[in-house]
Length: 272
Ligand code: SF4
Ligand code: SF4
Ligand code: SF4
Image (cartoon, rainbow, N blue to C red; front, side):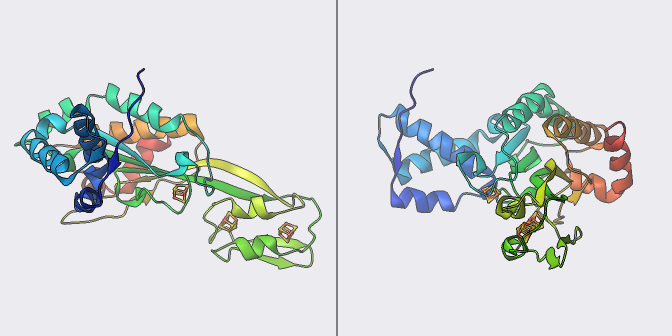
């Protein structure tokens, strides 16, 4: 594979990019950089952006892929990652590509396909949820649960201090965990010097049915923490549920609003 030439962005172009809707910004950015490279430019200008914007709007249906996978900046080296799994996003891309979601949407949507019809998967590597998984059709959030072991606690309180959720307290014997408050960020495990807190379940929580638009809905948690293989299986099942019940290109959140979460739980739960 050839080396991709890096291009810089002018301040004006960056300001214009900020005005592009966030859900297509990444794709527009990549297209604009391609455009600048093709023209031999080292600096992206507002003119490159405008050319791409016009082309993008004119050929919107060609640009629609049928699905999109967004990730947070975790793989770029964020120290907060509760899960470090570089293969998940590319594998999600591969599996979603195999489903021909664009062909599916073309058979369901009346009128031209638009970006908002695409099935969205958003992956965040920790509960800070920077990629906004709560408003995607499927949101995956990295989780690392603490487990209290028999190792003697020094009562140093480092775990209590680091926990932003106030999920940990201390008594004479050691830490007490309020699992109802814990978001499974894993920070207390890192902070514990004695091994009293060790890692329990690690993987991804799965949220389903988030959307914006006229009737916004925050995605609901299907329950559980899944390792990479199982999370891929859950995603396949949720997509299967969506393709079974989607009639006219409606988002998963609308389907869930009508069907109720139990129907999805039945679809997802068996054998996992
Ligand atoms: S979601 Fe967490 S891991 Fe990802 S970029 Fe945000 S803080 Fe970092
Ligand atoms: S995993 Fe995070 S939220 Fe849970 S107790 Fe530890 S620091 Fe608090
Ligand atoms: S559990 Fe670990 S971090 Fe928390 S008080 Fe005990 S030794 Fe310190």
